Image 1: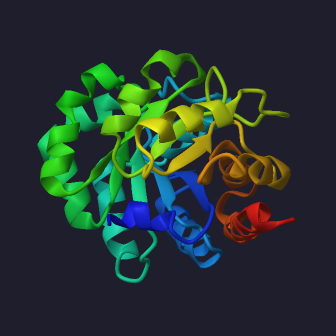
Image 2 (image 1 turned 90 degrees about the vertical axis):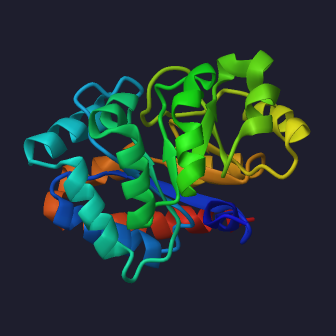
Length: 259
């Protein structure tokens, strides 16, 4: 069992996301430790990119702040090595194909694995083009995480059958961002995926921000992913954000177990 799969074996998984380097890597490192202590089951680390096409304004702005602060892929790898001295929570990178290409695909994946990462999510790489990345990830023991969207219906079974680690179920059309309500039939997406691959954990993201939303989605999926709401805390509080992020993660982690 991979560490990612194991993250879903203790009940409903809560998966927070942070943009690395916003406001700086020292704060990111402290926030990751705080999220792990608060009960995060798996942590997504965003590597900043100048044109993050899947992101809404909140995470786009975080990418710009992180790049302006001098954040680089190499410095993020160094941060992961430091974290892995005491943090055992599974961690995956979320970034864009250009970031990996510019670093060198094999060099990127091998360095990520050596630093202690468990998986890679590239939201701008469609299923049909994953052959450029998935075999390299497999070679070095990283799970290449597949995504499905509300528009994927005819392809969900095909994607799920080959998925590794967990399946990222995008709950809303459009870009990331906090939403007042989730109207997509997430349950149907998850059922179609599970019919094709019964052992595959399914986690729902894009738009989830409140404990009530997390609790509702946890009934249909194996985990909940939250990004924009946490990135907003980093934006609001800057270097003082860590305790606020810790409290938010603890509240969200507790949400799916509420009656």
